[in-house]
Every structure is written in structure tokens, then in C-alpha cells.
Image (cartoon, rainbow, N blue to C red):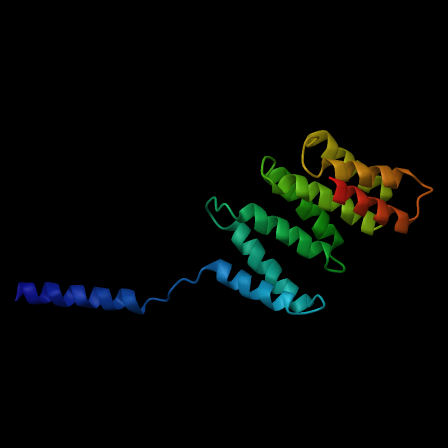
Length: 174
């Protein structure tokens, strides 16, 4: 009798485990949201809000997932392209730079921040971001582009079209 009750308890335990909800991988949700956004030719703010929540949840989870820096950077880029989220973009780029100082996303965050300042016509801040990039990562593969972008901003007599042409020329030659 004791054997049967142990067997029955074991079967009930197995059944209970099989009926528990399966935890879904948070990356599946992120990838599905990214796929939806890529399919659009505009930024859907409702979808962007869902993406921001998914990215933030992934970043805040316990543990040291090696993908966290990349998704933190993606969150900053999402804010960068989301009208009205300028403050969040700047804060998030700084978080990426400070949190992942020795990770490959740190220099990209600084360079993206410089480009974002340029987009917002904040020339002095853009120049400062490029200088920070150059000072911290002088031998980085993008250091030449940071120097070129900074020089173009400092040269008041160059038009925006000339800046883009010069930047394209320099990026091809590097």
C-alpha cells in the first residue's frame, strides 16, 4: 500500500509540474516587437512603448546576461528616434556609457550621443561628445570618424551638405 501511495504522489507531483505555466523567454517577446517595428515605415509610439518596457525589463532582471549591454544600447537608440523622448535618450546613452565602460557598446553610445546632439542642433554638446570619444578611445575603429565629425562642426563655413559629403568620403577611406 505504501508503494502505491508513493507512486500516486509521484504521479501527482509530475502532473502538477506539467500543468505549471511555462516561462517564456523574454527575448522572444523583444524579437517579436522588433520584427513588428521593422515592418513599419514609421515609429509606432504604442509599439515603441511596448519595446521600451520589454528592453527595460530585460535590463533590470537579475543576473549578468551578456546581451544586457546591447539591449540597453537599443533602448537608448529607441528613445533617440522617438519624438519627445530626448531627455530619456540622453540619460540612457549616459547609463550605457557608465554601466558598460569596458564593453564595446560604450564607445558607440558616446558617438551616438554626439550624433544625437547634432540632430538637436546642440553643436557644443556634440563637439564635447566627440572629444570625449577621442580622449577615451583614441585607437578605436571609429575614432577617425569622431575626429572628422568634430572638425566639420568646428568649421563654421562648411555647409551641411558638404559635411555629409566629407563624412561619407572619410568613412569610405577608413
